[in-house]
Length: 182
Image (tube, rainbow, N blue to C red; front, side, top):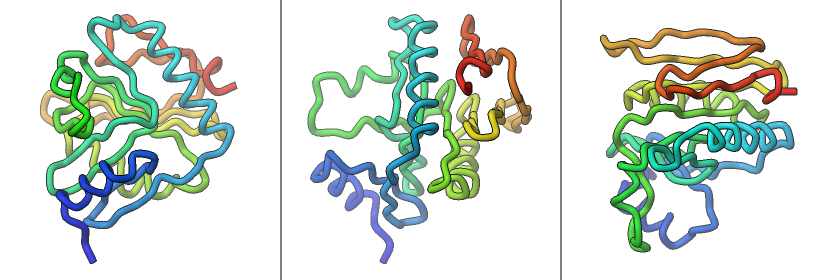
């Protein structure tokens, strides 16, 4: 039986320890991840936090949701959100931290338990949301696929197997893939 958005929000508020997502009206709990997955998201989050101006951007690691209203709620592995978008959640314990507007960077890290789901379900939804840059990091193959939104709404796709990557939507940020994925 499909779960309504209202029911989903009630479930989340009643189970704050759960990592529940909603896709196609179905609940899906984010499973536990491998060492390589967890290490990659922690290191990426740290690299982003070190380089971003805290007055302009926040970094979320397995926290907060991105949403397509009446469609889907996802917990990306890592995402960057402008501080101006977070103001509505400050000092509020009665609402979820959910972002509808496109974000500068949304990242999923491949794992054996979620690899197909991320590619088939989540990544297309991030493009439909209009997120500016979407990354899929693969810690075992040591590669990054980056999709960057173009002015006409389409996305370019680039594959990186090392070196330094600069997110187009985050000025002055450089991520050393060799360091991140070693």
